[in-house]
Image 1 (cartoon, helix red, strand yellow):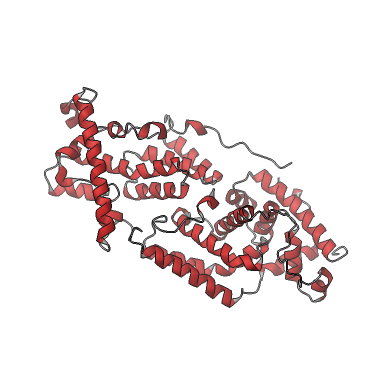
Image 2: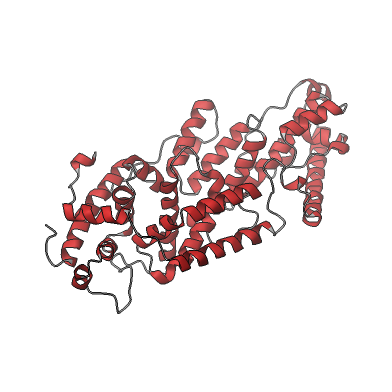
Length: 186
Length: 259
């Protein structure tokens, strides 16, 4: 499993040349916004984001030579971020599917969120009500616009399972958004 | 199943998701901290002295730090001495082919199966390589450095025979793949993939390509990259239809449905 290697030290693991290491760092820097946004969508709390994204960096570094340059980068990044966060949750024994992304007491109430026009917060809160495995499929396909075949390949699941998860995730997201807005969206 | 068979999202939900695609940039202070941490990790990795340098030069030819490399060279010399002693012992006991036939016959690749590799390593290295190494210490190969080009060059500038070069290449290839096998047995799949990639770079059409490709499938499978492992296994079966390796994975993983 990817996560099994994530906490080991970097040394003598990736075998990257200096040039490849520089290239890797540039890619990481370029995609950092995407990675941070992805982790937030996956429900990583703010206080964990920095540590989790660093773990993603370590895993990416070790696997950089295995990345197939003929395939799109972001689905590959997403799959790493997803697995790292999955393992992080398991290790910290916080496997609660409905745990909100932000657990601060001063987080705005759902109606306040809507009233303030903070649509992004509304969506993030809605996403946190989905189990992580379905949330990942939904984010990849609906937000990142990754074809379902690629979603299935990157997450290592059969295509039919990916569609099944997407179907349930759509229904659950609609229901969650409806609850958060205290009424149907339309 | 396609998108048409799925419940469609409401327009409001679609709008939220579309907004999310145009997300605002992340906090600059956070990004600075994250990048600084990444650079620190990278620079400490580079200064550790054991990370391979430019591609193709290999760990053992690095000229930046002498001490760790000297240790590695000593370890390699010991390992190959052990191989040579084992092979000579087997040779004397009559288990190996005659010296005449070795001169004219290139070694046949042997499958490196985890269960049989270590104890019989010296025998499976197929004898010829080890015996030749013992006979020609001046051109002692190192497991990770000597590439096919270097070996060809050695043949051109010295009086070693082509068969000697083939035998040395075989030993070097085995030395490259042994860490992969060991990493697999320790469930260190990242290291196994890295070792396999190193062999791929040095010997894309090597004698042990079949074993390398089988190790790659096992490492990918172990690392959880089931789709990649399936693809690699399919390629493997196409390339080596009669191979006895990968018999544990003749069929793709069963599809699990959530329903």
